[in-house]
Amino acid sequence: MDHQPAGIRHLLQRTSALLADDMGLGKTRQAVIAAGIRAQGKPVLVIVLNSLIINWQREILMVFPEAQIALQTFDAQAGWIIVNYERLGDFVRHAGCFAVMVIDEAHRLKEPTAAWTRHGFDIAAQVQNRYLLTGTPVLNREAELHTLLRLSGHPIGQLPLNEFCERFAGSPEFRKTLRDEISDWMLRRRKDVLPNLKGKQRQTVPVILSQVERDEYNQIMRSDTHRFARLGGLRQLLERVKVRIVADLMAELDVDDKVILFCEYQESLATLREHCLKMGIGCVTLVGSDSPKKRQKAIDAFQQDQDCRVFIGTRSAAGTGYNLTAANYVFFLGLPWTPGLQDQAEDRAYRNGQLRMVVVKIPLAEDTIDQQLWQMLMDKRALASDLIDPEAEESSKKALADIL
Image (cartoon, rainbow, N blue to C red; front, side):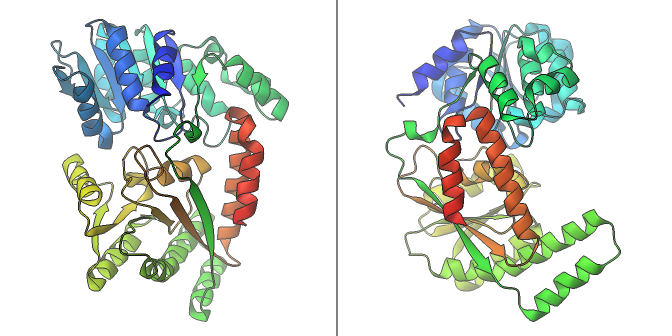
């Protein structure tokens, strides 16, 4: 792809860098090439989600077919070692051996007090070249960038968190100052660099609760359980309601259409799977407990089998890192907590290799917490745009306004 050489150069010209391209622009390939060149035969440590280990192994072998790759264990003979976040503690004592450290989905290390983030700090301090990859560097607040800056060794990351927030958080002016400070460190391209993409369209679908459903909703609202328990109960109820809506939407699809269904709860996933089986619609599922091999089998079936038309996954398990470009529809039964998580999930379909318009349908239950959560997502999207994509702010506002 034409934009990728610039990304490779961005990494190679710096010992500390963030590649923040939109999802689907090939950050993995760019990082593999740059890390392989930079390492000069010395080991590269790649830190990934457990579910993406196989993807990274395949990508490395596509670029370097003779590469020796160790998975989840330190091997002094290996040129590449791939490990998931939870196992980082095992590699602190080997950190000095690595010429390059690559952290994929780096936003997962946003909490500085988490054990794997602390281990990441310990490793990064001993590795000269540090490349961070994420399409969503900011999920909720500006302070999340502080962790990424610290991991990569950027001077701003060495500031105490309180001082960082005082200087760079809380207002558009402060965020502009931060954006200017990190402009050389962070490279971000949007999907308009892919001329063949046909576009992505979000559509909300109003949902009216039946009287029985409304009564159950009100009962949960009035209960004396803890507020977070009530919130969880309401979200689970609304997702259950939306199963019938999504079933109706699927019935409207053409025979050539494929759809990804994102759920927050496995109960909904099981119900949707039963519906597909009953209707004779080929489907696969993916949940957090699935092994990497089982996940890849489901992905390959959806991507390659014409009769497999529905991919059902929990958003937490299936919403990151996978290529599902066979789909031209994406339906959300539950709303994620951040726009970054929503974008990540949508862009399993809307990425390089997609040849059709991607339509995202978001059912929203009238007069429920769906409205408040949707507004919260709009507000967070505005913050992220202000910080990392200021030129896209107006178009984002217009797109959201069109949805509403």
